[in-house]
Each structure stands twice: as structure tokens, then as C-alpha cells.
Image (cartoon, rainbow, N blue to C red; front, top):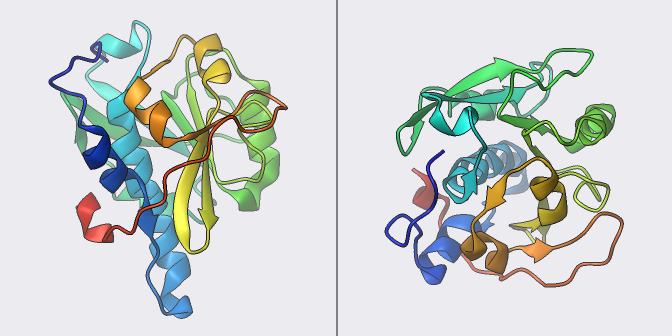
Length: 199
């Protein structure tokens, strides 16, 4: 992906509106909505990430998710969408887990073994994302969380830099920044935002 410029980086207030969402009620609809909201957040996060070559000059961004993951359907809605001039292509994360063909690999908390496999393959230029507990502290890059019915996120920039990934500073200011096996250094901002902002 191309380097960031001032023109492509949204203001902090707008970024906050895009990143933090209050989940809908009632509870019966909440799980499905949570999946869609987290997938939408991942889509928005991609604007803030730069990959090393050759990924940065590719026409596509390969997003890998296990086809048996409960989030697979939600992420299928991103297939064919664009981030700047690159098209997202949804790929099935293979079993056993191999991330060499991926630019982004997501796994959910329901598949902790896959999360551990993603962490074990750090350093391959792949953005790793999960909502598994302590994913960022254990070496994952982006950890989506739900607290008080709100989605927020942690980022481990140390893990990202080891894979030569660049994270825009605007995104880091919105996140709870952690290092591998460490305590958080910053608390994320909490805002009420309509999920329609992700359309």
C-alpha cells in the first residue's frame, strides 16, 4: 500500500467515529450485529496500515478467514470492496494454518488454536487480527474487544513492526496500545456511533 499522507489520514474526531461502535440491542440480534460491526471495523482499519513490498504494490489485499469461523459470513461482505486502489479478496485460511498467501488473517475467540497459530507465524508481513482474549499481549497485532456493549481495540505495534507493517499514528492514538506480554499503556476512547457509519 502507498505511504500515508495528510490528505488520506482522517481527522482524529472522524477516525474515532469510524472506529468505535455501540452494539445494537436487543440481545437476540446482538451476536450477528457484533460480527458485522467487527468486520466493518477491520475494513476501516486497513486505511491506516501500510504493507511492505510487494504487498504494497499489489492490486489486491488478501483477507484470510477460516471458512468454519463464525465470522466468515460477516467478512464475506468485504469481498470485492476497495481500500484506496486495492480490492479485497476473501481467502479461506487453510488448516493447518499457513499465512504465506495472506495480507490479513483474522480468527475469532471461538478458535483459540488458530489464534495461537497466527501468533506463532509472526514476522511474515501479515496483519493478524482477532477478538480472542489477550491476543495483542501474546503477540497478535490487533485485538477487537467488547466492553460495556461497545467495540474497541488494542494494538501491539511491536508485533506489527516485526512484520514490517506500518501503523498510522492517528490509529495508535485511538487504540489501547500494548506490547507483548505487557500491561496496556493507554486507554481507548469510547464513543456512541451508529453502525450505519460503516456503510
